[in-house]
Length: 100
Length: 524
Image (cartoon, rainbow over all chains, first blue to last red; front, side, top):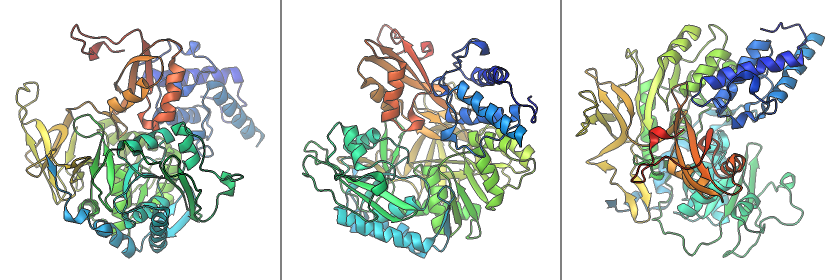
């Protein structure tokens, strides 16, 4: 789990996001990827077989993993749709927290 | 078997009187959290009268069907009741229903109007492939008139569209559709709500549930759960769906309980709102509770009743919720056709798939199935008799009552009734996909996908979700330049979000037996 006061390294964040997404997809009946590493950065999360409920679960997992609050300020239909957009979201929030 | 269109369905808005009378005596409040407004019951009643007059001016006549698509909030209540007051029959669809689907329902049931918050006439014209004759030059959404406005057009070929902004919280578009000379004729049912349903045969239908039947359902809930005007109900399940319609809209209307509404489910918002708004009743589906429990603080104040309906309540969900919040989850079971059936209040010692005893005013029995050796003794089809039950399904010939035999409706669910009178459900007999409580008819999705150029054949079926719910899967054989992205875009334009396939498999061909039957166990 990432420290709440340390700025996040984009590559580390991206790798961890891949693992979180893979863990979620693996629980389903049709995971389209063989491992976290092969998930593309620009994968459209709405097209990999996850439901709106899974999407929220992913958001909660990201919040917990990086100790940030996302759903407090972003409504579900505005959540990022790609891993790279998630990574930017996480890094930006970690940076703000550090500066604060 | 088709019953006659009986007296109370043919007398102007008399049929709507049970709901309208509850509306006018309601002294409760509706809090729309997304719009940030609190609206008194009296204001909603006044707005409903305005909407009714406005619709009559637009041209709605008693018995006209109207496709209704409005999200949770006071606008739903005012527009719904206004439609009934004008003698219309609202076909109640999800607030996020896209234009193509609105038009499809309108065409299928010969509706003359579409009433929507999100979709205006221009979008309907665009969806229909026609030219935009609805918007006067220079008019934009931001310049939308604050009162109704007619945009003249040839009634035989064009859409009439009007917008009505009666207040900060009520802004709807009513579009009169072009006359269709080939439209099927349906019996007029003035002031009668119509609810789309998966039916019990796996074909999409529309259930005719009168205002009186809706009021009866609310009374069953109120009596069983002892709901009073001191209660506060959080409604995030769609009020367009039978569960939210009955437990949110109708119960608050009848009891005077405060109604707090949300359109989007956000577990963090729910965890905050439950204590902040001192919610006492929270109707949810199990998958929502899995997330709320993660977002809520340990020992967070919870409502006196946390209800779970729409999908089986997994033991893990109930246990985790109880452990974290100290509040038990209460299963609720119902169908669109019957309204609520059971609410397991009062410590009914539930185990597994048990949903409790029928509410007062509801009877249940189980009919054995011949040649079903795989079912345990006592198992069979669950049948319901209730004063809240629908009159039947809407057909061109009249109200089809054949699903109700000797007063009993066959739910399509399989189960048993134990010695304490509690219903235990074990599954469904028909091919319906249950997406977090929202029922999806595979054939409807198949027809949409098959209408895309390049799709040779398609099968839509249920996949398992880890929560115990289901998701929509589609196996599609394509040719030419059809691909997954095009299929997804096509579904997005034509289907409400919960009906769109979450998992899409492109296949060479569907697996079939020598007789041509699709082999379900060989689908990806």
